[in-house]
Length: 309
Length: 248
Image (cartoon, rainbow over all chains, first blue to last red):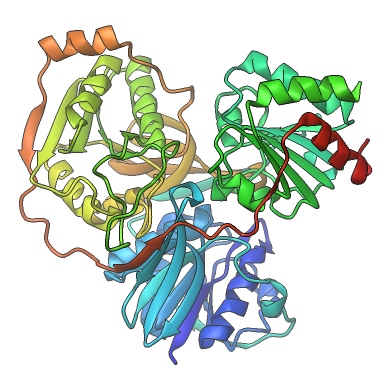
């Protein structure tokens, strides 16, 4: 079996959980080698589950241009069978740039990777309504893996593996990192609430949020939301659950008019109890929910709020 | 300044997605298609830049069913020009689509290419970074804030947990737009009809696409229902669950 190159992801001086998930996955597939690009050397001491680390000094902060060029240099050095990145904002960019620059096949949105002669990846597409199996050939190839697809514990081990260095290649210098922007402090911290009433696209207008707020009040809950509600500017970013928002694990998560796209599920699927109310009986949210009701959310919520008063 | 916005149609996910007989792809015959919502955001952002200063906005799409309507709608919203690429596969995955678009866009003199960061069927990659590599332009994806000054785009790239990073990107560049600064505008049917009478869509042949990074779809299937939710049929039953879980 060939080397599996895992791209370590870090933000603000800390390794992302996905790094450990991917190392665990890589160890199951072959010989795990970690590409450690930029970032403080201290983090390498957490990569004990990998057989080797290849380091490039590309600056402490992610930059698609410099990190992209560094990853190409590491890939040339390692000559891996498969490169695994996270399906995150950073990981997707790196996976795509590597694939395009090296003409290596790529599968994204992957939840499973296997090697049996050929490398195969299973991806959740079309809002999770279709599962596709892609054959990427015998390698080299690139797979971007959805967060939470493998247990992080399997790839988490303190210790410093052998470290090799690769020189930072020259770039055109067209992208400049300026600063990180931290989120504004929130009026409500949805990650600490026992009960969340979450709303999605099924809420048709800003005024309709009131019905969710009334239910939340009756349950001593906070109102959270999926991406479309935040993009419309109806609720602040601090209420967003999902891939680019917050990860929550309340005792009870009530999903109102949320279809359950993979990006949203990533943020809430570990809630203890999930109740979903949606008018589309095929909505993927019903696959992760413990209880579901196929109905107009407004009818249900009004009746439920009354019943709780 | 010239802004090019590639537009792509994707299946409307509200519909049932049927598979082809081989089980290797969607059956597009009866599928209702609509503009990829992230492309709509990219178009909106381009129109906002145009309205905040001056820019020429060019919408580009691969020819296919209902593509004329999509392009006329873009013109009705405020795009200056619409270009239709003929002789290419309208259902191509992004690696192939990026080659087709790179061919078409490379001669346009674009300062900025705004691409929807993702689309519902993305299997073999994201369009923006692949297209950027073929056009040899710098790129940043998952962008929610964009400002252009003197040949530089200042962008905000989203990470998880509400954290963002600010980058300066030298133009010309390809930006993967996550969300426009405001909700994409709506073009009334009457205005689209009116544009259809007065404006025209330019056509351009796809030409030789060259080598495409290929991978094979062995199988597409609907996910197994994982036992899934216990379906409740009344509000009383929800209240029972809430009591059982100690919430009320």
